[in-house]
Image (cartoon, rainbow, N blue to C red; front, side):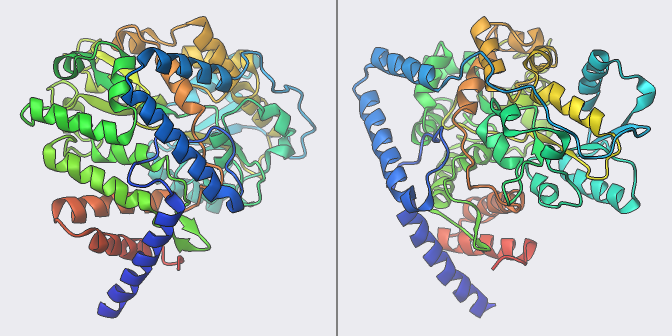
Length: 508
């Protein structure tokens, strides 16, 4: 074990050095993610230097306190980035090369959060009868679905379309015996011209073949208690809140200020896991490269931020999904929650407020937060052995290609959908997606905020099949070693690598 530890320590040192040179960002964290495709490796260092210069310029502008100028620049940027409300995607589909004419159109998912509503809309639009449709509901957490799917394939059960979660989608997308290229259903690049880039990256296999497509863009923001923000920060609008937490250094400093003012009673951040979900989305290095674990400078950066918040009470010590986590939204122990598309209803925020009659219902707003991110998301894939390819094509087109039916679903579900033109149209029209959520947010349209973040997420070249395991191993190790046990960063890093080596023995 001592030999292993010395070896890992050497690897850690080399990895940190590599990460430091690749980062080129000094001590300050990255506060933005490029909106365009990532540059080739040969120009990555130059690109990051340009980003660093842009961030320094933005920070100098903020220090001058010219808020009006900042707002004007932001408006100009939004105008440049925003897609046209007129869809550029083609609805013309090619020929189907998979089997058709089967008895039951079978769709499988790990729970009933999405499929029933989607099937209902699709059946009403196409006139498909109930006796044609079979929904397999595993009724498990997303992470447990993979075993259920494996059992279906092993048993040779009827399966046409199934849903994959972002964390483990590549397991199936990279397996030609489990997923068919969407081209075989008549879909082309033109059909998906309006989807968000990051969702397209997850839907492609290692050879760049599109095997899955998502109907949702699971971008997130930072939802916060408006009464506590006014009490401790003097903040009265989402824009003012954003100016307090617009990058990670500001976020942590503001959390320290709140913790001091409240005597440690109120934390800015809901959970360490929520913070990590957001921070990890801005990594510029893939977790695995040439079959080796990559630990860049951002890992230590996050650990140091986490320690500052952990020690001062700027983040709660509640585990996610625990009753105490939800309760912190009502008992003043947490001012804000990192919430993704699917979390604004009862999954997270509404439940944290205590429901419609809860103590803090209507006392929330949302802003973009310290960095753009996505949390979760689901990809529709097709079994190569399907015998209902026509229904599969129609189902996918309804929620990912046709702007009319996409908008209908976005407003009725509600769901922040994976179509830039449709979401721009909704934002421009000012239509509220759902009274339950907008009332929870005191009338604010949260689609507007998510729209800004969704356009800035970039995963080009950053996705690996191991991401879910490595991210979980990292945050578990940081909490247990660096925060709770007081281990050094070097020892924490070694423990992290040992954990990854145990969980993913194939990595070198």
